Length: 205
Image 1 (cartoon, rainbow, N blue to C red):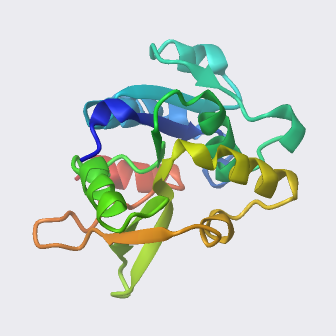
Image 2: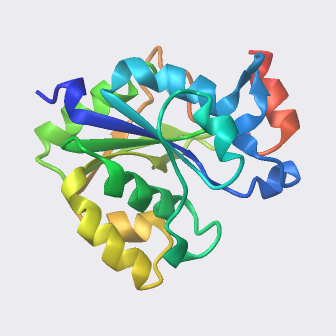
Image 3: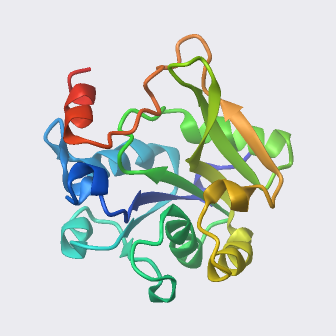
């Protein structure tokens, strides 16, 4: 059984926020708390260490009390979530790393436990959440990944070779999909807020 002390949680807050009009998404309020801080507080009981990946307003993120790291300059500006994976793995001092985006505030309280159980049971390198969407299809949620920290070299090679798509990288490794569609699972758990209107809709729940 993987102990939570062996897992570093990484909050991904390094995006452009282009669909929110270019605002820094992680600093938008969700029930009066900045989204990234809300994510950090929700993830904190599920992991040992915590890191934030952000590319602007670093002082604001640092005020949340955990280490903040921007993307590697070698990958260019706003190189996508996989650049955040690389940043996190370079700083991770535990055997495993869990990635969670800052814009999905209702992710499950047992997210990490269920991914860790599947990772061990399948002897996989990566465990990825999957959720049933409005059309009834079960779809992978690639920014919700628990992975072995030793995958650093793989992410480094892939991103420096120009790769940017998470699913193209995870396809290179033994990856187990973990469905979060049991009775009692929140169907909106993996709904990400791309606009301020969507964020207010989630608040009202």
